[in-house]
Image 1: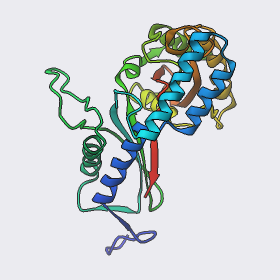
Image 2: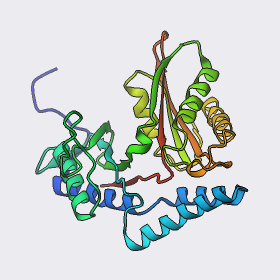
Image 3: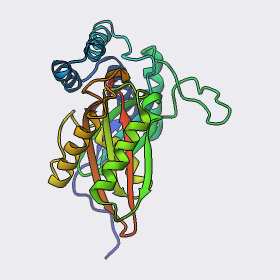
Image 4: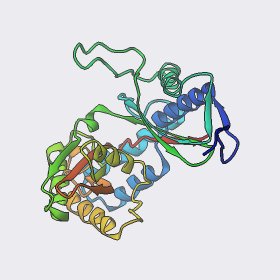
Length: 291
């Protein structure tokens, strides 16, 4: 090729660092105070099915708490989470006025200060609090186009502690995957504040599987995997099995241990079968916006 100016398919769109920070801040405040309507709908449906008085009371309190939080602009839970951000950055976008990572971190700082949200991030060894809930965990994907999609996901420690990741036998198949997920839920018991949403990542590598599991939690509650009927069937089978465990809302027994099981999958090495489970409490918080 001859020398000359690099060619582009279209004009580059500029998005300011301030716009990114302001959007991230708004999303984390909203996510922490407003339970999504799909989650509320799933809890209401579970309440209609439940027969146990203690389970019905627990589900009723979840709904009452969500109503108060939305009305009073208060956190849904005292644990306002580790800030996780999924960003889909259009390849034709240029961030101006700062580097992209810092823009997001500034937004998280602003949200947790302005929203009076508990700051829960600390040094892993000294346990000294960073004071502003940063650094956030950021996952960036470069996509076609000139838009920036931001998803804010505050992840509480109680549910996060119940995560599981393993390299099971490559020949384990669907039955091995089912067993791994159900064993993780049994081990978690009441600790992640059920009813939970269970995100599962299958395949990829030891580092990709947990990200797939986290991404699975971003789907609308009960939205099946539309790309693979085998995965959709596995989601249904695991949900039925989990709800037969009888752990129930808040661990008090009942039919509703989980509101949904969402699975995302990726191809993996012929010798490997990574599986990850990311459990989300009933306060399934996430919010998104596109700039």
